[in-house]
Length: 222
Image (cartoon, rainbow, N blue to C red; front, side, top):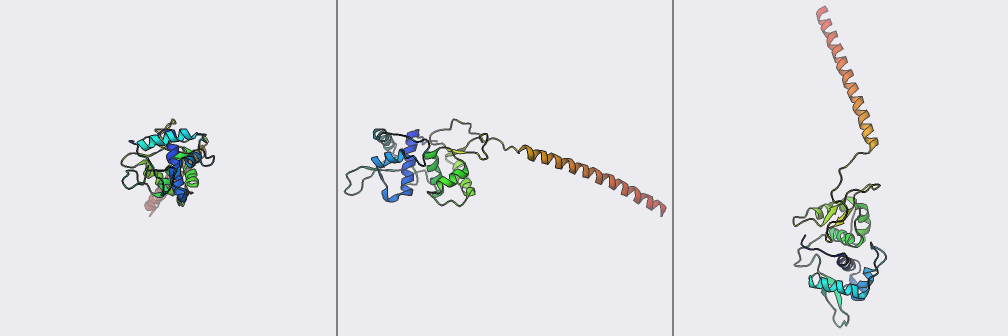
């Protein structure tokens, strides 16, 4: 993937996307507002405690990468920043509102299940159900220019696999989705059913033999 972000760059980009969608009247963000967004205790994983100079350093790097632009309103004395990460006029990253919300939440919260993404991304875009999340994620995983999301191996005790964004590189966890394994109870039930079906087939074959013998005997008697 040509576009790579550090962990802190992902946090800054995620915050700018979030505030652009959630609070457009307060966007672009001043440096102080961006620091508060990065250190926000809700909707963040992990929770950070960045200093203003830390965020400014990250913003400077993102500006050199042309992923963030300083944009101050008329008469404003405070520099404000907005992202050029996705959905810009000439940018290559074009996402639907649902995909934008999902990418944003993965940048801000880390790997999540489809159910978690429906809950979290639903505050940024209308998402009807988990199936819509799965469809959006599937497209993000199969884009012609390269995947932006990967499915992680299902962890012990979890019913669903989690998904992670790839802008900060491949996750430390194994990224190959594990083969689907039927529960032991299901396998046992299937085995019992197969045995019953086999027994019935043998009984039908035996009865067919008896009927054919009776028919032959009746034919001879006639």
